[in-house]
Image (cartoon, rainbow, N blue to C red):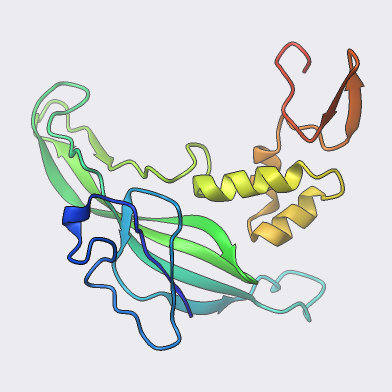
Length: 204
């Protein structure tokens, strides 16, 4: 079992300059720098196995291992005023979101992200929203790092969407959406050779 821990955030937040003091390192565990900013791990990782074969013909396929890491968003600037009417905001509980991260070996990695919810105090407005997740891809429930990994896999002409889905441990529809606009085969245009990249708008 291993623990991801955020290592790049203002030093004053941590007692020893790098590691969150409330995350204990146990025998047999390691801490890995994710290279992402904006969060801190709040507890131990939890391993489980999920059965994706209930409706599949091949019932002999092994269950998928999942590792969940509880993390909390760290935003240096907290919102004070409503983005709609300008009235003061108030805290409105905590929201949790699952964000898929880079696989750890043969295991799917999930970040259980805790973030603050806010509500407008104006009774005629009542806008509510949650903190942004700075390391999440804007369009998908994956980290920016995982999206880049998927794009790198898709840039290889010998790797298919199905293979990418299996390697990255994400649903094939997510891979397909991320790969939209990418050329998964060799082609020639105006003497240029494009392989697994997004072409300019005038070419598509």
